[in-house]
Image (tube, rainbow, N blue to C red):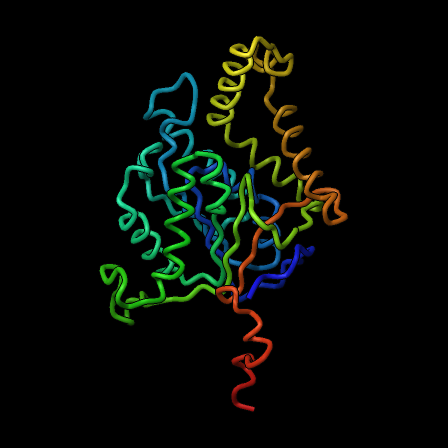
Length: 291
């Protein structure tokens, strides 16, 4: 059963709900869905963010150890601004996830899902991640997608099953939220106009990563025979803020036009394994079972 066409989605109150976001690198939480994360937090959701790599290669002019330390600190700063309740760092070496056995990363995520028991699981769209050629993001997208199903089976990854007394048992997430560049078949838009400044402030926390990003843009431009004044100003010691605000606001405004909002983020949301119609036909809320 296919999901509905794209709609504007409001974040419901989530006093008893949690969402687990799985990203390969720390800044992706802020840049791709920072507004929605903030709205989840404001609505009372418990927001968990799993950062799979150590971000040791995402900087410019720093040693690997210095990059690792700076990126961890800045990831935690951004998480606090967005209202993320808990950060989880798996610390796989950046740039190596495509070389891992699929079962290893999947098992690690199964363990986190069973331990934290989220209502929703959010990660990159596997189709878009593959098309972009980013092996770390693609590996995370595939592993998280597989972990969604594997976490429900007591025959899968029994090394991540423990006695019920320890609180770790099979678990089924109710929703999957896919995001990222090249998103296929968006179903939902979230109006983030009220929290756009939180998103921008969180994104700008990632100073080490942004320095690396600017350096890469400068290299590409020079190879193509171009100079960008905004990049020249940053390399001369200017602020990166105008560039990042321009990029994030332009993307948010483009998505916003699709749903009548000033700024928005978009997702492919799959509820109840894509069989949501069964809930309409046969489902009853658990609170109604005794009546």
